[in-house]
Amino acid sequence: MSTTTTYPLSQRVQNMEESATIKMAQMARELKAEGHDVISLSLGEPDFDTPDHIKEAAKKALDEGYTKYTPVPGLNVLRKAIQAKFKRDNNLDFGINQIVVSNGAKQSIANLSLALLNEGDEVIIFAPFWVSYSEIVKLGGGVPVLISAGIDSDYKVTAEQVEAAITDKTKAVLFSSPCNPTGSVYTADELDAIATVISKHEDIFIIADEIYEYINFSDKHVSIGAFPQVKDRTITVNGFSKGFSMTGWRLGYIGAPAWIASACAKIQGQFTSGANAFAQKAAAYALEADMGPTTEMRKAFLKRRELVIEMLSAIPGFKVNNPKGAFYSFPDISAFFGKSDGETTIETADDFCEYLLHKAHVAVVTGSAFGADNCFRLSYAASEETLKEAINRIAEACSKLK
Ligand code: PMP
Ligand code: GLU
Figure (cartoon, helix red, strand yellow):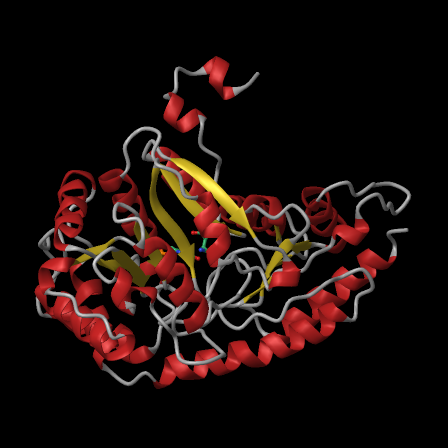
């Protein structure tokens, strides 16, 4: 019997998908707990610990009494550090009143959805997209409008596609660059063209998720909000989870027009209040301190990318992209559709991932969760040894599909 017929849950939650990344990671944990030798490359989480100097700053903050409620939009010391970071790294000029710190970039995006959307407002999402975008938009009463690009376009949509998707209901455009799940990075020219299209519609906002900013193997990171034609209409989302390996600290933030920032703070003031006090103090320190550990992590991800791309490309039937950032590979495996190992027939990317989980004991996430039915996502935030073992297992399982 389905939950909907058993419990009187809200339509809102019934309409919402469970997070596929979190679900897969949990399934892998459970199989492991049962004694199976499962390698999980499902969750987008750096495998490195938070750098020591940041942990020390948090311990110091605790000793200094950063143990109380914080101002809802964030501690001043952190907002000032973010303001300086936006200027230093992104050429973005925000006043302190335009910055809101939240419990993760996920909450930042949820605040925006609740603050900006009315029932039926459309949000154009570039697909493949991070699993939570569509569900957060729906939670805010909005309608996700997906525009897609396949592997042959490096998974990047064009300004023309954006233009064609705009209607009189469009409220915002939402995307990540570097992108989760593809690792693709939009170039300055591509962002400029998209910005120009949007600048022609004065009531459309851009929500630019730049959480993988520091894991960029190509040119210097470019923020779409720095283009003059959209600078007053762009909300830049970022956070500490990826670049500083601080996923469990739960800290994200936005830089936004002041009226949007204060609406987000208003919502947050009723939902969660200000984020964790000592974590914020340490995060302020992280932004101003030595970025050496972040650079080292990026180098390690780059080395792993080379390994993963080489090994995956060698598997017959795999079409592999060359991600310029983040820590994901997003192969197209549609060549396996219709094939079978004599026991299981693969019809979809979901089947393929299930097959890998049960036959190779490797957990990855189906592309369908990211709006790409021919693909799957492999997170290479794992040691080289683990990655080699996992991909060897994948190759062996795939060789049985005829
Ligand atoms: N945006 C993207 C593209 C992500 O991959 C993630 C990963 N969790 C988030 C936002 C949210 O990050 P967090 O809530 O940990 O700051
Ligand atoms: N963003 C990460 C991922 O895509 C973490 C899990 C989540 O929040 O979805 O796997």
